[in-house]
Image (cartoon, rainbow, N blue to C red; front, side, top):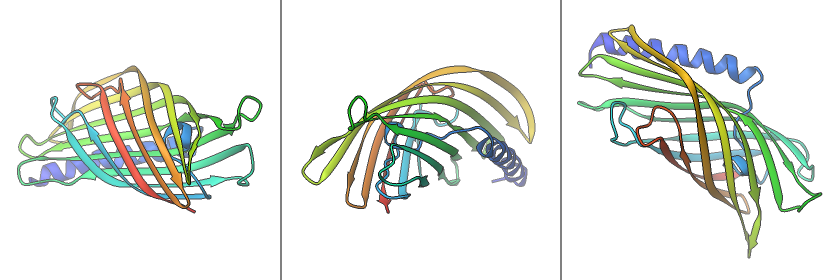
Length: 235
């Protein structure tokens, strides 16, 4: 991997990190509770996270990323309404002839249990600050993609023995900014809106939490979709 490529990716990642920090500490809300794909039992969520993007950065190949999720939920356990802060990071390191991929999201969420309708029903509101970066060794190029989707979500708890399952749906509208760099020089920029739709299911048992989901309509992915899975604990 060339020195120019390393510097280009470092610059792209630094810019993305700054953007996400500014957005995350501002009015943003992150999809972080059951209606938006990150279940809680206690106040803290820690999990292994993997996602498959239907893109290798230039075409319809796939990129499999691995990382983790951290979240903290505020409010009493018996409260109808909870606020949560979360961080999600996944990456695939450079290989000898391949590309590096980074995928990060940060922010907060607000979730309310709808006791007036059904105590098993909950709803969330979120605005995610997320960023992806691809780096291509052989071509000395990089792609940076930042998006801020506004999402709502609904989940319904179904108790089966000691396990609580929560199927969820979450439509969202996102503003995105996509840029291409060659030798640390920005060659193109595209901004716009996309509409996304996420479906999935989570499971909670004692301290163990699991979640899987599929998202359609995300800009920058040839088939406009991604699959995600997480497994961890909440205490």
